[in-house]
Image (cartoon, rainbow, N blue to C red; front, side):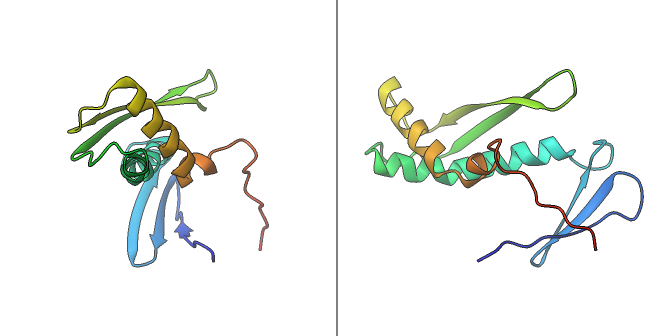
Length: 127
């Protein structure tokens, strides 16, 4: 199985991507759409939500209800992503140990988090 995205940039630094029947635009300069790192943070947080829900079920934490994530990406001197942090709030009242267990399991389940590991680098060919 593979995931496929078709991306086109007519000029400048803005790219429109076709993802199945959906279309999204990302502007590397962040002037006309989210920039690339903002899009990555949004995808990471969106992936972490279901991972939290499953992690909570698997760690007997119950239903989390409404989940809000404030994702922050700290940049290094080269404006590259250096670290990511999530400030998570839920309707559930989790103690520290349960919250840590749910977060640990969510990290194991989140596919985007797994994909941003250092060893994952695109194999590029020019046609």
